[in-house]
Length: 297
Length: 338
Image (tube, rainbow over all chains, first blue to last red):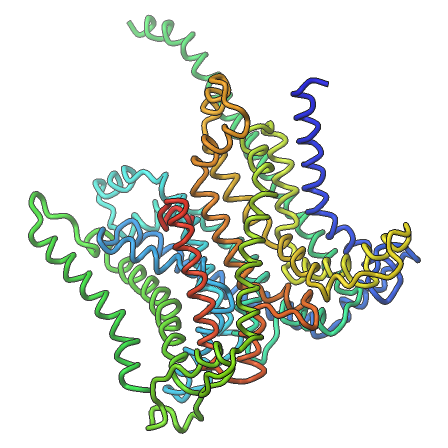
């Protein structure tokens, strides 16, 4: 065997190990969702069953938590996307000496442990509720939305910043020269340009919100979300119904990933066809133009 | 609340903003050449209002004020609401004293349980970070420099799927693998390698394996992005000049990928040290991770002031780690947080 062959074999072995480590636990968990024993067991398979899925959907607490998670997720999207966009736009215009401090402050939540964001949110708003004498702000759903938005807005901002890097301000200047107001420029040029980033920020914000446990478990107070109920269930004792939930999540993410890939390929194909068509047009023009120019002459 | 605290918490951000605003105005007045547009001229009234309100709410109401509040909280004793702002509401270090000595007044004994948990958390988080780097680096390099575009797309899809599986479920999967009646013990017993099952959970093996698994992909993506930007010709050039493979990685690829390495390491350390789900699910009866202790200060001991002090200790540890990484890798903060 040549040395290159040995390298390839070693690399292949490593890749198999890596993906084995990555998927092994998930596959074991998925198997236990279809196996009959009360305690989640992947091997030996004692009998196939779907009863754990039935148990999962009959679990009132979990379904209520899921519903709350979805509501919080929507509120987080509604809050973080505009905040992240404002953050990114201000980043391009902020006073140069203040820029690094500004960046430090708005990005710090990404590098702060989630429990701390939850704790500080709860402490702050407990006091706000006390001053204002109104218990309305001291509400688990509201606090979870705020706590999660603290760092999810930063994710959104980073997405907007990378799209803004490729933004050509010439378009803006052209619009201004043609008499557009800055407000019109914002709505008719900047926002359409940022649309793909807005969509991906919204998707990331929603998924991150549903996923979050560390911040939510503090901020949710007496309410419950999918993750807090799930953590409670897992601690109480393990049942294969939780494996069934994992199977549902994995299935959804596989479908999502495949759909995403299909959309991306379709887009790549369309772009390729467009550029092919453009090249073809150019080629034809190169052939035709001497004719047309002589014709005009 | 205490008037001094109020001045500090609300005054500090206001003074900072006013100082920068005054400096910016001064520089604009004394600028040579054509006057630059002001913020409002450039954006128009409606958009300016949105930007200022948006950034104001996010920065002050969501980030700065709650954090300063938590800091202030940690320096006060636990009080009934009626006593707050009264004579009993003084500044104190008792919450920190409790962390070190296990008592708010005496300094005779060490608070062994909490200190041990704290050290264990830090040491293990660093170990997990290094391990994650070692596991991910070859894969990131392979995807970024060796693999064909089609391979990259397939592998990336495969990487993204486990990424969206919840942290709690990942921990749960490790519970199934490592439990006394779990898969690993069942198999080891069946092939006759063991006669009694190993208590992986009691020995924290399950916890460490679960934590290593949980944040693997947060190391992978920054590493991949950094190595991907390296021009393959540089590697070819090094190879043509006779550099052995480990020289290429140590002296060409890694220095180039430093920002990605730094950001992956920071994220993994922060997430492991702040992990709550995995220790709750996989922690044995004796094992103590620091975050669940912080949680218990709040919702078992109902001592929010002490909880804040513990949270601040965790936060300072993470800040120290970020500073250390910036020093070691000689990268700036903006390169880490991307």
